[in-house]
Image (tube, rainbow, N blue to C red; front, side, top):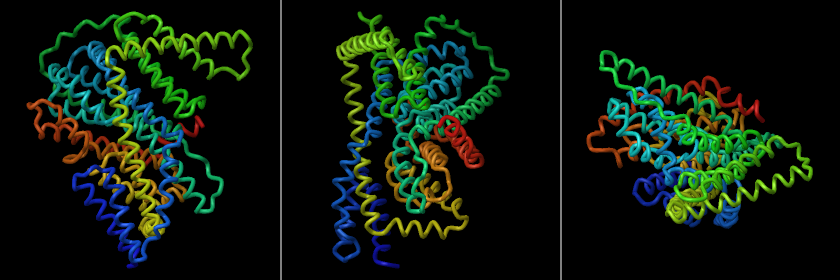
Length: 510
């Protein structure tokens, strides 16, 4: 064993110890490699010149236009939560599906899928689902274990259903790592991998998981309902209430995702569209004057998007004047929304939450850059590549090793931390071969989602227990989550057996 390999082992042990010590993960991910690098430089195992590249890497991270989408997507989700738009959607959906145990369970699951597409933040989604949907499910007769499992599993759908912050960060890392790995393997003109590719690749697997969850919940509650007294079905809400609650958020999500998949907007531009849409949606639902102007501004934004999607790039005087008028309406509606939300305290609360989450994300990204530098300075890439090549099973063996490590790391680290540790350190040997980078990225996203649910350390379980009432015991939570972990593993196995679930739609669209 060489001196550099000894320091790589020391780096791994120190990193694990730092994370388990309870200090902030950002400090452990950056501080431990820095200390190990200094120790290695004293005995000639590490070249301190590698550390000179750190400022340039940090500058590259902060100037990366793709990562600008992160705070915009976060703001979009936080605004929908703070403005209580999400709460109204769940109430109306529960009334539509009848208020029975099966109706409430399915409504919570559908609501989770919609919220996953608008927030993508596991902790916030799980807490919101507990506060808003758990009492309604228990009142409708959903057993406590099943209600707990539905909330925990539904809260993690934001990891896999686009547009997802995790997929944005995965797309950034996999795109860079794939390009570098292919060039090292001798392919100097590889196809680029974008966030749009991952969004398209994750869409069908995400919907597949929702379907598996719904089938399980419906079957369990159908069996439990045999012989039980019939529940009086409440009156369905008027059509106007349904459209007012669901049409604006769904149109916003479709506009964001559709603009990316149609190729008319980059991920960052679509994130800006989502943030503006969430601002106007929250302003529209606030009582007070100017609501009609906000509605007109939102319609103008949608019309501008349609014009961009279906125009051929040539606009006459009439179309130009119409576009200018729509822009004016959009600006006016946005100004009115900002004034209303600021006066109600919603905008300041959403801005504070967005700043906190974004700071955490970028802190981890910068810290992981230090880890990657030190790892490379100790020759870690060559060591990992050699180990992967000698694994039994070739590429499949290496893939199973990486997925297993991601699953285990999910007990200790957040998804963002895992992405910026595993992909640049362990991804090159896999992405340098013939494995589809889109398929690999979706596998990682689904694997990360599974680790959020696995007892006893799944983060979704901690978030759930932090706000769940006392009558929901830890045993109820673990018993309720276990079937969903099995369903998650079934979905992961189906994705591994049929890679086209992730690769077909990107191939059609792009």
